[in-house]
Image (tube, rainbow, N blue to C red):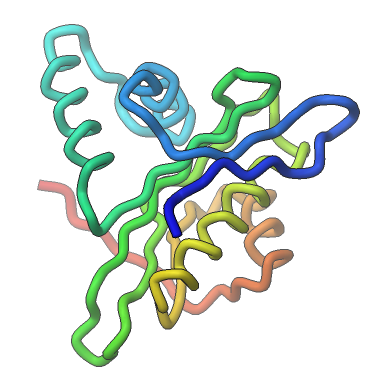
Length: 159
């Protein structure tokens, strides 16, 4: 099954839709990633960053979703489906999940996660995982509410 639009429960008369990210969403996704703490894309790097985004959208081992609230992009989630050496089935990994601050608490993050879990099940994944900063306490409550468990730490070395 392809990544389809999925209306969720409309919070207080608004309409939330989760749909596949499209090339036209580049600017909105870039702004959301900045809210997540990623560096801003400077004008001189925009063309290269757009190419990375477009490549990601077209990779067969990824799915990128946006959430719209009354037609405005307010959330983004990317998924990667990766092989693990000790598993016969792929693992779904969420490298990016963000809802703009003004739209938090409306069920948008949950709707993105639920659609991501559907896609992981459709691909017969054995698990879905993500990383989250220690300071994102509210997001951690959401992850636990959808059944995820805190199972470790991650470490990074920047080059």
